Length: 490
Image (tube, rainbow, N blue to C red):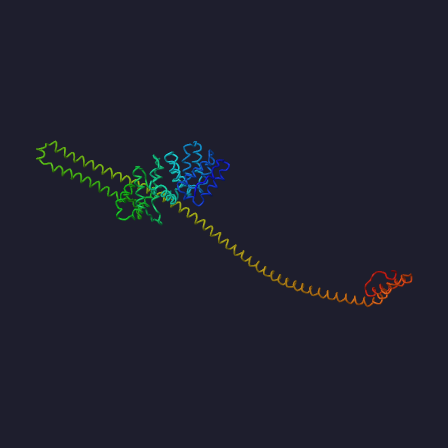
């Protein structure tokens, strides 16, 4: 796909339409656009947006239809020229208005923009990356979500230029702790419950980055467990690398929670005491050995001062070494005590949570008993309703049976009516024919006589005869039942 000159219109009124056309143009290639195409579309978008900052916000709102790298490049290009209120508006849009938590596309946009702005505006870059890290925390462990860790892995860790190492510093302690936690967890793959794995090369790269920055941090208990479980599966030839990672992350002293007691023991406390005792004995033995090596000849030849100086030199060196060992062991002991305190606190919290859960369970059990009583009551009511329904169904059956009988009776009546109508029609037709024949028989002679008079000249006598003839005809019709009025006076 080649960038076109279709989108030259910088009129804000046409921005939405032009943006939608641009999205349609790259449809299906959103995540596969080469770098050259990205630059072309950035040029087009910059012309479309012009000086209208609301157009920039509307473009950000289309984040799920545009490549994240395209939006990030465009904002990076114009960031330095934006006013502070516009920058604030964009930050608010990216953080508080765009979805967060489980929306990976919005997280991806913030991460890509953070990396794009790391050189031009380190503060905004840090705000965006730490905002996404914080909003990805889920569950009772407050751990970064797996999808977000996968995003960090692909965007900041796996690439050859290792973008994670380009994040600007210094970082506040809370944000540093958060970033280290997210970065380390991105290296851990979840296989199934309590089963994890980690690529040695990737995990080593992140741990090396942490050690170079001399971070001070404390790994959450769940992350200690996941890392330890992952490293435990590495082959023996990686034992040196595993030991180095354990050392860098402070995992070489593993706390063990006793299942039989409510106390927490450390396997290293006794070892620390043994090291202290061993170090003291070693120091004493070396001092005695070096003292034995200074013979009378040495004293005579070199002088008492040189002999004493040698003894003091070795003694001071051993005391220094012993002091370092003691300090190291004290630090380890303090770390173990701190971890022990943290686990005790966690245990107390878990006990409190367990008590709260037990109380909640009791309340729910009482509620369940109440529900059970209501269910029994509803069962009785249901049985009563079912009895009524059966009664109504029986009544409906009777009514339907009566309706069927009535329907059949009506049908028979209709048939009888049809037959009666037919008989009436036949009888009427017959009576009409009989009447016609009677009229024809009664009037045939009279009609023939009248027909003979058609050619005769009309006279008074003829008229009198015709009137008499007509009266005769009416009389005959009246006799046949066809009354036409008073024929006597007609």
